[in-house]
Length: 598
Image (cartoon, rainbow, N blue to C red; front, side, top):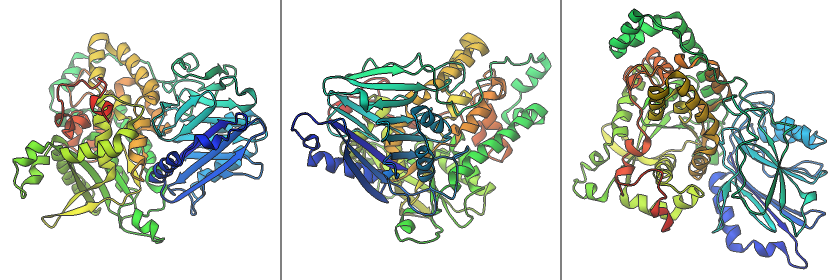
């Protein structure tokens, strides 16, 4: 993982573009990039032939390859790559070599813009990147189709800025995930807007629509957009969303499934050869996704990496963990592939108001943090210990008081949220930041001990609800419009995931020197689920806590997580109780007044 930034300035007359980059700006840039990538920081600056100055900055969290690959990477032709990503699969994936090096060498052989676009279309994994092709004087940049890595831009008449997070007081926007963008520096002069070409994805993430008609740059000033509709970047998800309707069940079959208890229902479905086969296939595909995300790293915690140790038995991997269905299945699968001597950190965040803590004695202060997610988290750890008894599971109770929340929101989190600004962004962003920070308490031999997670990789369950019908709006759509309406909603859900919250979550998590990895959004997982008929993934004729995410529930049941298999969906802002600390009457979509006041 990396923090990346490009500052491009026009040189006007005798004025130096560096005058626009103040010492305070550079200090903020350096500090924020190093928070994301603490292992290396470098910069490259040069002037182009057409009165531009380009400044490339990058920090690195070393996770791939046996040796650290410093960035920015400049090849012998003068091309420069800033890469914040992971190549987990496909023809460019080489687990023993830094993917930064692999990609730079592959791009170095390209002789025109279309060849570059085709190479970038081979990437399978999360990324944001900036690539300067010196011979053609082109600047290419973009994000993966799901937006798993953040890239923001700020554009003015004489400056073009790209960065992993917002800087200063300027207005930043997220670079859209609708394709790859190319800034032709040969077409810019000091009196014109920047000209940006977009190479759209060949199809949307669902495979059911094209992207080039959905690009809206009306809110970006000093920019001219031209879409290259005759050349696309290949969608890495190679299967379209299956729209086939479910089979018609007999009244007897339907009665057996809908009238039995959860255990009986799961057993009945797993006796069906069709369900059984697809649960087995899903287990294989999801397990492979988890394997790639836990094994592609040095197996070193933060402390042992700094000390240059060759191995360690501490936690190199943590899991954003509520004890709910998504996170507990990921935890169980991660156990299969991590070294047996390493512990796994389960990061569980809970909030308590000052008023609640004031009425609680010191000895019982932990009871104030017994939120719904804390209770399901503890129960889930018991289940994990039962099915994976040889693993050391560290259940980290991250307890956040109202005072701590207010302080860190002001000092750190509010800036990371930019440009997101709703009440929901604030609640979820704060909860995830504290969880990723990993500082809390670990129950050991009946006593609580202070603990700071040393994990450098954080597995996150985002993407399961969108693909498996986990939100209440999916059930509402099904009730009102049937299977066809539900499929339309799932397609919309998948197609807009790149423009929603993953960029925010990347900024929040990465600020703690930890890389987020999303097993449910692996391209192979999404392709498999797209290809599967919707009725094998969910059955919203069944009650809440059973019908939604049915495929994942069956998998949890199969591997022995019986209690988690029937847990209903609970959002982190409610499960952690952060939503109850401040103004509980706010709507999630409202602009957050607390952020506006900072």
